[in-house]
Every structure is written in C-alpha cells, then in structure tokens.
Amino acid sequence: MPTPRTVVYPGSLDPIHNGHIDIAARAAHLFDQVIVAVYDLPKKRLLFDVDERMDMARRALAEYPNIQVAKFSGLLVNYVQTVGAMAVIRGLRVFSDFEFEFRMGVANKKLAPTIETVAIMADERHLHISSSTVREIAELGGDVSSMVPAFVDEALKLRFAERNAAHGSPDYTISIRD
Image 1 (cartoon, rainbow, N blue to C red):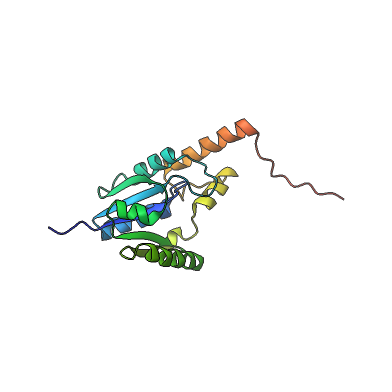
Image 2 (cartoon, one colour):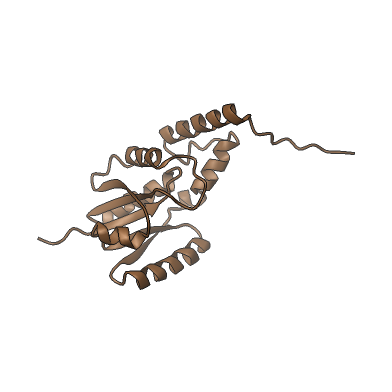
C-alpha cells in the first residue's frame, strides 16, 4: 500500500479567510492529507489566540475530510518532518508573495532537502485578500463578509466591539486648521 501523500499548509490564520480556504481545498484535491498548521507564536501582533484561530480553521474546513487542523511551534521544517509530510503548501497572490516564498522555499530546502515547497496560485477572486487587510477593514467598521465565512465576520465584529469598549472607540477624524 502506498504511503499517503501528506502536505502541510502553514500560517497564522489571523483570521482565516476565503483565500486560505480556497488554497487548502485545492490542496485537498491534489494530496491525500492536508494538515493546516496554525503557527502558535508568529512574530506579529495577533487578534485571536491560537485556540480561537484553530477553531475558526476547523469550522471553515469541516467539509473536507482529508484536511486536519493542528497547532505548531518552532521551525516549520521540523514540524513537517515530525508529521511525516512530503511538502509545504504555499499560496501565491502577487509577485511579492513569490519572492518571499521563493526565499523561504530555498531556505527550507537547505534545512530539509527532502521537503518540497508547492505553490498554488490564488484564485483571482481572492487576490486582494490577506488577513491583515481583513483585520484592518473590520476594525474600521467595513464589510468583510465577502472575504471570510460568516462566523469569522461575527468573531471580528465581536472582538473589535470588545476592544472598543475596553479602550474607547478609535478616533479617525481629521481636523483641518485655517
């Protein structure tokens, strides 16, 4: 019996959005098992903790039986080797993504020569979506319902309402002086 072709699709997923879901779903059609690996301590300010991000990813990807969601820490290639995966999946939206992912893929290959990096081009419907864009629009009260599942949209609204209640609503008015 052949070994299952397992791949890891890593990210902070803060929050998961339709572009992430599309890449994971397309990977699930190409490989036997996809592990959506939620990085627990990325070097950026997070809106949601790792358990919240994992829960949202599980809900968003529940219809795909060959996708599992897991948490990882440390060096990605170490995690990929630990779970016995053959490759890392990365999504590409724009040229700058390619440049970044190319460098990371080369670095990962130096660290773990048996692990491949597989890039999947983003669907044109999702080229404009990133987690930071979603967070910024949602924080300013904009509509992100076309970019994220409904439960993520609600979680964003709730989180920003909680923050605004605790810290006061952000003031984005511009004053013009004579």
